[in-house]
Image (cartoon, rainbow, N blue to C red; front, side):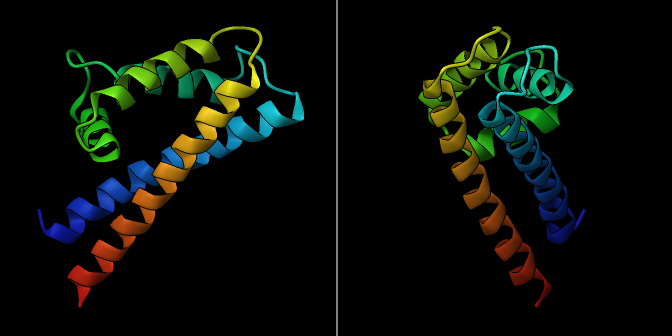
Length: 121
């Protein structure tokens, strides 16, 4: 697979996570979010899976590695956020942590797109 193909696949994963985070954050801030909501459930599962070392498919593992860049503390925080999303009430601390994660994801999405463009030239 070419470098562009690798970056394109990674970009798709990062973009999907960014959109999922946006959907959940909008619902949380509007007060319309419930633990059984599809997007909230998907984000919870994804964050918990990305925090694990074993039993995770390679695409989620790659996403985890790219986003945390080796910091174990990030992966621990993801697990905590994933479990908190399963609770019926969500506090402003979780929302702030999800917003911080959304910033990291957006930064990485921008860097990945730049890498793809650089490979195309």
